[in-house]
Image (cartoon, rainbow, N blue to C red; front, side):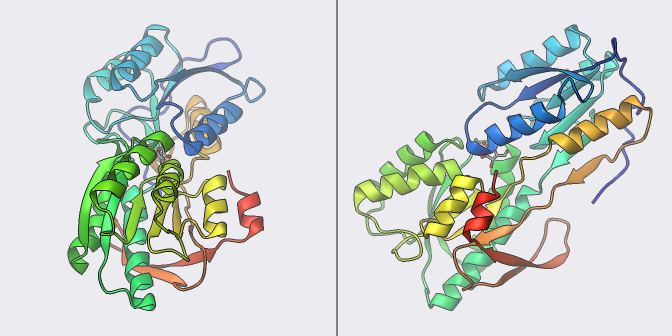
Length: 332
Ligand code: AHR
């Protein structure tokens, strides 16, 4: 789905020398997803491709991220790319970029309190949560599981990935009357997922049969914690495990049956982002929004497809792909 950008003129930005200078303010290095995202942008914005990329890892610190963008403005880079840690608090610094005539491209997560950027490339995270809810409903029906007692390990609070996945999944919690026992943040990290799950295993011993991890790294930690606590999980266990991202290691766990279903969030946004910057540099219009395609994966074909009303209000039916070794090998 694409819309044409209108908020900032397409030919803004001044190239220096032969290379286009680009500042990239990245969230951090919290997950396998993040590593793939960083690599994708670094590869696409190589010198061979005509770019001089300055990369800042903000280590999940929102203040540091605002400062990194201000530093890029001060350095008068030609373009700024932001993957926003949180969805709000952006209008002032984006106004500063606009006043300096530096186009901003937002990738992955969204900015929800300002429209002062030229383009966004990413995924509809509410659809990820909706698809997970639709899959769990169909899976429980197929397996004859009547009561769902759910623990959620959420991502970084206030990030659009956390907000969207929660909103989408909670729609099913409410409509189906599921029992959501608790939701605590694991900050999208393995360590965070493990700590939250260790505490859940003590507080909710014997009371839960679903764990929703809002990314694969949290699922790695959660599974380790359940193993240590003697809780059985996955396709042959007592606890259904749902995850998001579908990175290579996550897909391997789906194949092994440790994760039942994994809903991809595509991190490979570098090439589309570089194309947009090149088009802007050439004075062309660019799409205001670009959605990455994202498949949904499961260990088996108990649920062959999911049907739901997506965030755009469309009724959709999408395949659940059964993971095999070739899918794992091709993963990011
Ligand atoms: O914004 C994308 C999310 O951030 C991914 O799901 C997660 O792995 C990352 O940390």
